[in-house]
Image (cartoon, rainbow, N blue to C red; front, side, top):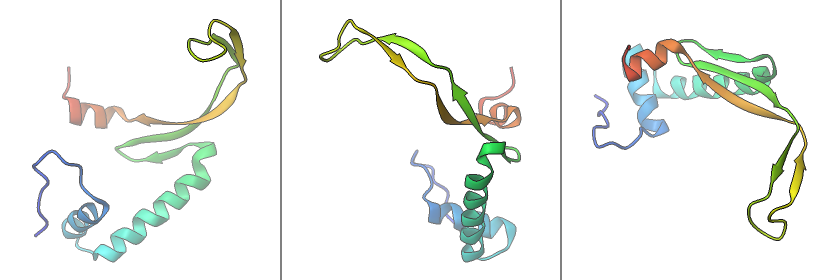
Length: 104
């Protein structure tokens, strides 16, 4: 039986794989292969958004160009232009938020 992590530490990949393998009834190796395939698929599909059912969505968004005032360093006090760029974000699903934080 897989041990539960009650000491506040996050589960390692191996512990997570063994718990899922026991719950679903497959081998740890099959769970590891599933994790690998899921991550590869997420990398390819992130441009279109990638949904992990019940957990959340991986999305690619674009930050607008902006100006900011430098606070520290040799350019302190100067206004610097920051160009637009693409960033990867993970949006947690409402079901996951409710399950973890509790309903209001």
